[in-house]
Image 1 (cartoon, helix red, strand yellow):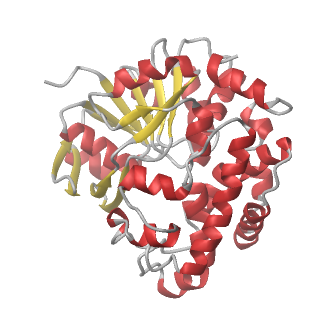
Image 2 (cartoon, one colour):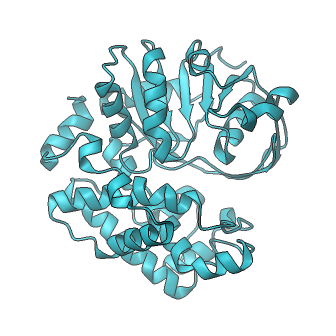
Length: 363
């Protein structure tokens, strides 16, 4: 028998529908919130979400709403499953309605998600005793296949999770373990943020395949056909810079090769071979357009904060800078301006020791 915990999933995209449908299918009381009511109208009418792939069945939802106050009213666990660029607006919308004891979990936080969420609550003078946590990656590989249907390609074996402050991580793990035994405690949110593999994979693969994406509208396998030996070399360069910035923060970040083995049991002599050997990536198509979250989310919410932290700590990140510049040029957007900088994370001017104290103690 499932515990009577109330769970709200915020966001009805690929991931939000997968999580809401799967949790409901497993017997949890689930509310699905989406800012745009038309996005969830079919789900509301049908009363839930149809699942296929690794999980097959129907997940009946308790409530489908576009009212944030209603969505948070009964919730103990609030699963934020939106693009990371929406975390700030979600925190702003939630701030007037939060209650003591609630847990906000970002799936995933990308880089600095929990720090940014906490900073917004601080700016909005939230006094309720709430916990913000972030997952290192999203637990599902999934795609919507209809307005109320989602295909789950793979559920990851393990996903590190950390709370801010780190002293509350064990409490969060206990609160979520009946729903997701795959979550394991991470050292702190610096570890989950700097192990953000989306920062390595998404912008670089997309930018290197820009012509193919536009020519085929994404009709090729993104992680296998889109990653040739040369593209893998670029991925490895980005990965080295991420690991170096993490090291400056006092964090031992997983390499992309280590992460693939941990998350998917995919191994290889190098990154190219491991990605080709990853069964969990098989059949996942490339984005149909360059106007995709792999650029408009992962550049400002993954690459920019790593580069901003690196700049503050004196760590060069030339390959990442090149990806940010190219993405900004393709989108006609200054991602340096809109992205998560150390100022927006609330850590500007801090030493690595100050930042570690913040993530361990919350002050």
